[in-house]
Length: 84
Image 1: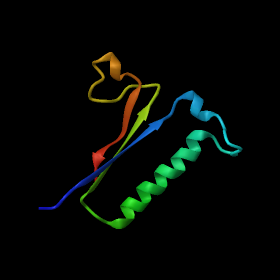
Image 2: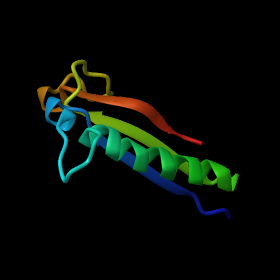
Image 3: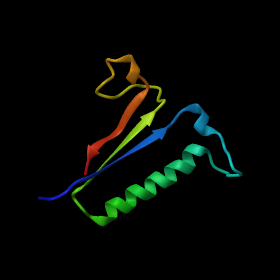
């Protein structure tokens, strides 16, 4: 039986992520997204069909998730559902 692997990337997209820290010329969000895109590209590049991934954003303006009925899950959006 084939083993599957799942990676969920959780990204804070709140207003404070627009700040620049540690002497960088780019925002904290842009800096963190470079890491995430690099990891996703590396994973896709392997061509393995048993690797699943998902991207979830926190502190979004909208709410887009299966648990939105509960106020505890507001301002959370699933940008990329778990899949290949």
